[in-house]
Length: 120
Image 1 (cartoon, helix red, strand yellow):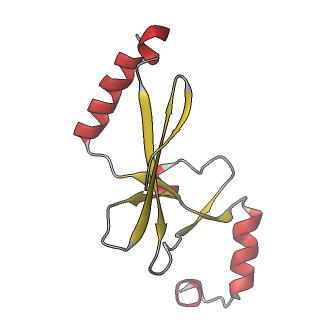
Image 2: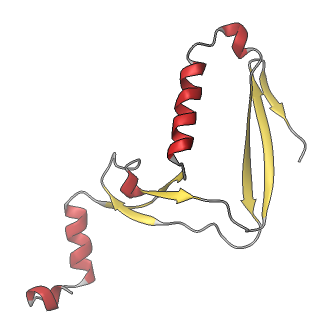
Image 3: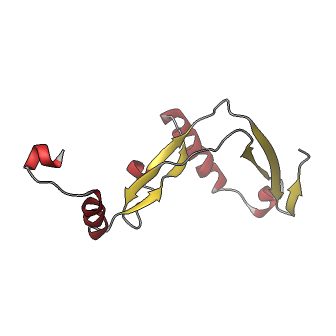
């Protein structure tokens, strides 16, 4: 490409060196859930509601989450060139979607009183 466009031959290492000299580093892209405008609006409304919660309200809340371990193959990583502090810019993120891969799911929760456990 460079030779065709500019008549100059350069090595891959020269390209890497110039990219590094400009302050870019090769990093794994951060993941973020794919959100529609409807999801974004609902999340904002929920967050604004939570701002009004008092301590007595938080005592009734259970936060739960799930995680998965890939049983078939690797999840794979996408690498991007970015500068320090750019990890959450859209161009440096990779969206996450549901897939049909085989995984082992694990659930857990936390409350006002502390950490809880869930059977697998």
